[in-house]
Length: 418
Image (cartoon, rainbow, N blue to C red; front, side, top):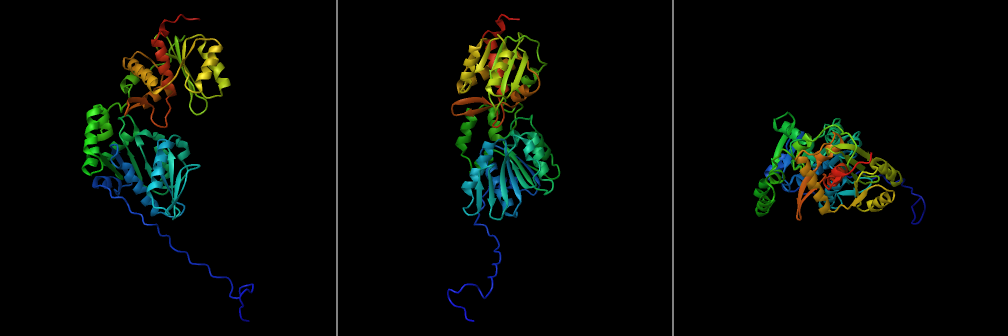
């Protein structure tokens, strides 16, 4: 029977399914890397360790390397970019969004930043601040960005994810002293260990390649301390790694918890994300009380009062800390508020640095020592600034600096209330 227009049904049967069309990426033009940059990143070895100066092209080149690995991958394969903090991993994610051709990928920001390419391969942007969350995945290639600022346990976790896939990894970063696992791994690679490749990219390499302006590098050399310039621009590690307290001095000040009572207290306040830390110093300026906890304010206030008693205490009154200090003062005791600003924080940190370098203070092994060792100084347009690296805590250092400032202002002469 002839088929009439408008008639229901389909006498010819269902239409055949179209054949799958092979996926073709929109035109991706890899960036041109200068020879030393290309050799460092595209070496055949599975492990490439690259100690590099600031702005020498290490991040840019490794972004290209990782996306090319993902483009050569397939649906369901995972590739990782691991940075010290969530903020730093987002930097790479945003750069990919700006530079990859439209139509080549889909980007998501939550629950964690990721980019899925049209071939189904996925680049995920991780943070190394909680190594336990890095286990379990099968990863086909990875980049560890700013490796000297990532915990060694995070590198162990990432290495485990590459086991089943035998995936390659690129470890990149500025150098930061000689007391970290990344420096030791670089020396292992430099020694010629099988499967490892070592490279150094300096600012002068980037100048020669036309990536950096020579006058800018010369200006940095003239204005920055020699040790800082060597680390940031020539990838030469210094003994202390830009630590403002002096690593040797820190280690010389380590000792057991001192005997009480305290003569001065410092309290750095936090609620949930960071830690509330209280440190008491005795007559010999040794830490004799160390409190560190997270709790609602209603629980924190009586705990602070119990630990401090009538001993003079300098308390963080910045932001939400201001009403807490007022509540402590109303409850009795000897509490003085201290508002952290860039200038005031710098002042008490410099005071703590001088005390440590003169070996006039004692503190126990543990969180206090680790935070002091992690601290660094950075140079900004407004001058030098002491701070914890991105993603790490400074609660113990702030509390110790407050207690030290209060001690210096007369705490050691306070009459005890036994």
